[in-house]
Image (cartoon, rainbow, N blue to C red; front, side, top):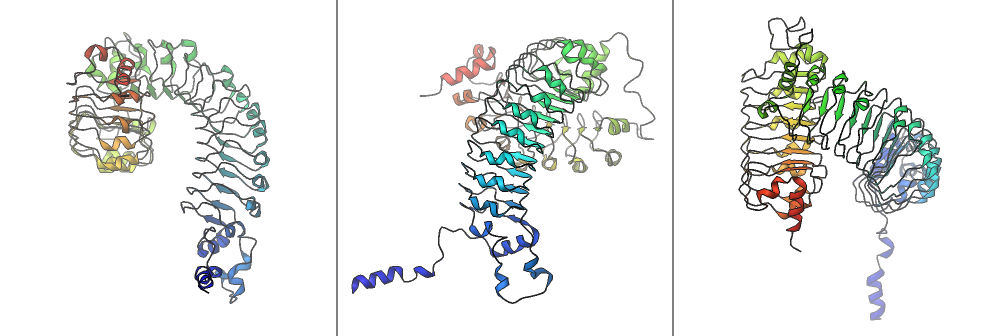
Length: 597
């Protein structure tokens, strides 16, 4: 009897308990999904998709078995087929073949899960237009996926793919393909059949060459091949008539690719091994507005660079350039010229800190015969009675220029003049500003470059709303720390903080993985955390010169992305000055040798 009694105690409620393995979804969400056609189950710690989700449009709703109401919100018989299913940021390890029960899906978001395989039934979703599979553990894709004739966007970044099948070319409606952060060593020739493709992301793979069929993609506007093993780029890429943005950063290129792509506006070839730039290569870039050549080994620039009349930004940071062609000063649209980290001769160091305008004036002064059209003379486009505000710069160059005025505030008239123009750069350097102008927030939708150097700033909290900033110059101020909210600037590539009052490395910079350049020289920084610096995977330039570093942690040698590390002028004893003088590679190698085993 005791044994029976024990058995009853264990099993008496068994039939009344819901199965623990079946995850639940609030019925209210399912009910709302029948009305809207969208079901968002992102970030709900799901390990599998509940059966009730798959059968959403198959099973009769619960309210059909209760009181029948004729209210508009209760007409269960007028339900909408599910078209958007969002399952991102869960712990899904598999997807059931029951996904075929949702044939009306146009969007299926499965990114940030633990998926290792996909069911063949995915190929039955004939209406699917967006399939998001990034941040999973996929090593292959079922052949059925390539039968989705209406698929327009396929995102597969950060998986374990080492190859793509030829069947990829069957996705003829595809306009966006992202296979970055995988282990691809080559691409299928079928890629060239994706005639409607507009965006192609191939970065952070192991590609040593690009397929011959790539030039057939005549509608591609953006091509990102950064962080691969490319030593050459085929000249046939010039046939890509719509190509506007080309990213070739962090490869093994030894020369500037000679691309005559007629629409090319932005070319990024930083962090390569380019030693020289040929004049004929440059002359093919007729429409180029942005040219990034930073972190290479370029010794000279050809005169043909001055023929790039549309150029607005030229980045030559961290090269071996000794002299500049004076004709650079004649580039009519050039707003940003970056030269940090070059052994320039004949140009005073203080001139480099005064910004692009002063540098271009200097270069123009080296030309014996000035051009007919004066660049800095007032024009009819200057506001009446306000000569300090250049409306021409605002309208044409999309630039707010109010520097070297010795002013303690920026006039409201400047922001009013820019109200209807999407300004991309602002220069308020060399003034007496103690605060960031509050009205600068009005430009947050478009502003990408800001120069607040040579002022009296002790706080820069207002900058945290400028979420599109790419370059920020705060040198020669009175800053002691940076606000935590600065990490909201997820597009920031470079920050210049030289000649401030920092006593420690700003904590927030460790949490900004987009940073490529950090200039923190001539402060009072006493230490740096190399373990946290390793999280800055794009960091290539770090200037800690003339600070208070008593020791350099050996683990700093593990930061192998650094191409320029400046440590001179600190009171540490090791590494010795002779090693520091040999350059970044020698310092990093020495530090690695000092890591305890």
